[in-house]
Length: 342
Image (cartoon, rainbow, N blue to C red):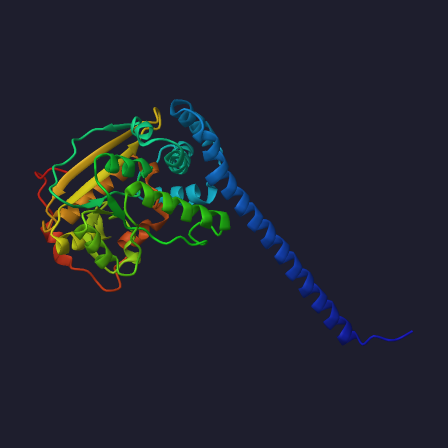
């Protein structure tokens, strides 16, 4: 019988243990990936597809019931709720999470309805609460990461406005690591370009592309509530009783182009499923208090329906001092309370 040296035996045992651990990690990683892809398939594609074939009065009620499932968008709503509780009062966390999931499901449903239904059918669910502004020529439009905004682009196009939307490129990381989500994101952006009537605007050369679009007779639409960490153009404003920072890129483009600014909000009623479109402006982009008025409007929307805000995990970024600094004199230019809110 051949003797095995004890040191060599221990070394072989350790190597085998490492191999087993690596195999287990690969299996666990594969299972996690499959779960992520399955959740994406159900939450972003199958559920919206099932609801999309139903009449809206029925579809939104089914969506409201399905949104009770806590596994739906679990990573999103848990991170959002955890952050939201630091900024607004939430007396019923379970009900808040239900409404947040409902908003996310409706947002994905809106994309499918945009592909399947006529613009007239989509617009029947929107109540326009304020008159459309009189704008001679083009303008810079702004909306927020609040509610489900796809129908707003339909409303803008129905009003005779072609636009180019400022958009971020899709990544697997941004879609929860799912390849299906990555594909879905690309298809969704393609639909957004179709509905808006103009090509989307991606970085780099965002400013020049925007100026070219405005010169060509199209509006440029963007979101002023992009986290300041994603842009170098941020200014101090008052948010939730303290100094925060919001990107000023939309206003800078409007100033360069010499066009006004128009702000849109599209609310979602949890009880009826109807949307309320509010339009404010046009505003002079050179108004030194306009950025603060936009910030006040944004904060008001969040306080009104905090479950409608979809960027809660990024909220701390709005209060981190930008790397390049910011012009603190803007705070002294806050408009008086007598000015109309957006």
